[in-house]
Image: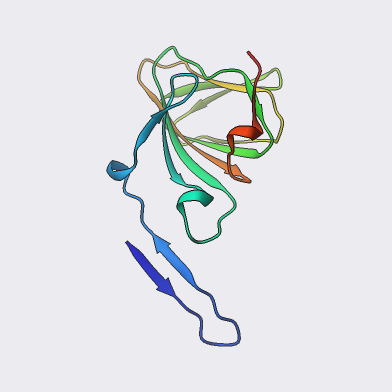
Length: 136
């Protein structure tokens, strides 16, 4: 669904409202076996955004590959329990926790619970494959 909003005073703004429904978004499999749904990214949004927002699902006992990315990231845990390792420091996370990860931080996330781990990741500037470096 798209809506256009305009401000008619001194400046004109054209914002296209975009609703992304979870069941309509294709799930892709990441390098480390995560399931990824890319909600918003400059390539799928006409509003000129500079960030990306994706939902990840990681099965119990699994972890992402050790990597670093040129962008900053914010993780928000939707369900489950996780260990996030950032530059040799470990952080225990659970539902409704969030954490900022600075650019170029060595990191991985591990599902330490018995159920799927689901989390959102906001990346600014938006994630690009060439900006991610796999370290293992």
